[in-house]
Image (cartoon, rainbow over the protein chains, first blue to last red):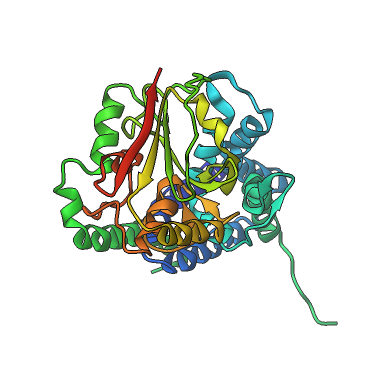
Length: 144
Length: 202
């Protein structure tokens, strides 16, 4: 039940951040500020899972990033059926709108035919899983 | 207010604030029945989603006589934005600069426009110096990010029409006098600032 609540909170934050950041791109650089705020809020949500058992933390994190992982798999499958791979990339851009302002700061460098932001967008599900999981761990810094 | 409540409330609140700011600054767009967002919704209601049914339609249009700064429009059947779904600017040597999802602002061979069912070549009615400056502007943004709903403000997100619109607007030619949120490819086709070199529909 606690896990379900945590997942619902993450989805709620993600969807409203998508709206807020998407609209704020009209007033740059507010989009960057909101994007950083999104990372802070997600970080604080992750910290609230510190007392969860590890398997619950993983479940929450993966459930939250499941759409991103499915879209990632569709993109790299390069399937041409119904142009699914192409559409998956478009949907992925929308799904990660909350982080798009940060990607837009990357230099316009091409590597193996694709711009840098393309690789970072595809990596975002895994970057966010790592970010969320690390912050949800009960790490204490102590002075000896 | 506890941080847990703050986390849930902050983004709905910011979305509302920014929506009201954008809406109040753009009331003319909401009252324009030809605005891109209304066109999109109307076409979506008829089952036209995204850029339509893409395939290789082999329109085989001739690109002879194109000059740097000319515009190329392409479209598939069932496109939700209008007749055309894509746009590019000719930069010479058989190459076109355009903006697309996974490639960002990039250079492509012009022949890929043969894949569209609808294609149109447009000549901007401007001095070659102006057109050269527009091409230079676009070239400076190679590798920049594509975002489908890129608003016209700012220079970090682009879609295929915004980059062309901005390149020419910097030279005093505005292809969107209605000042919409977005520029549909069809607006270039309808503009008085261009003349049609040739077009094909297969």
